[in-house]
Image (cartoon, rainbow, N blue to C red; front, side, top):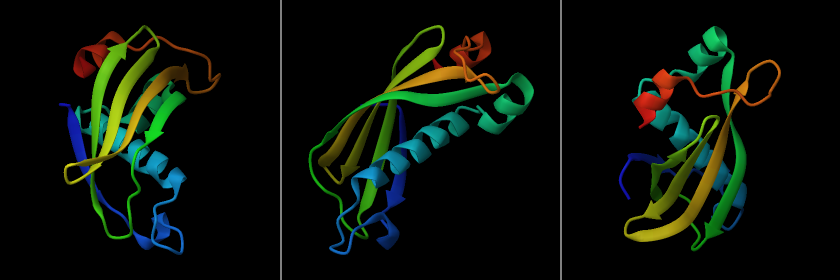
Amino acid sequence: MVGHVWDIRVYYEDTDSGGVVYHSSYLNFMERSRTEWLRGLGINQKKLKQDQEILFVVHHIDIKFKQPAFFDDLLKIQTELISMGSAKIVVEQKINRGNDCLIEAVVTIACVNGKKLKPKRIPDNIKLIME
């Protein structure tokens, strides 16, 4: 898998009392990684909302939990663009610890109007940057 790679350390707050990462923490890790992917492409989500009333929101996640992560693990979150429509983006995300794949997910992201929360076309300049 090529694309964006982002490292994150598992903190105690991400885990249960046994040091195992909560399932919901993986969603946070993936969200942060997608934000860093966009930031790395020069896409400022705050500016998109202010200037063009555009938000990117998660519409659907298909996630496979393969192995657990633990307190103090160093994880790599990989994000790769799979497809893009007029108002949606599909990315594959994997969370790895070393050579072990812990999580595989396909995330569908909708582009919506920031006030009405209705689907909105992804601007052509954003599409060009992502492609």
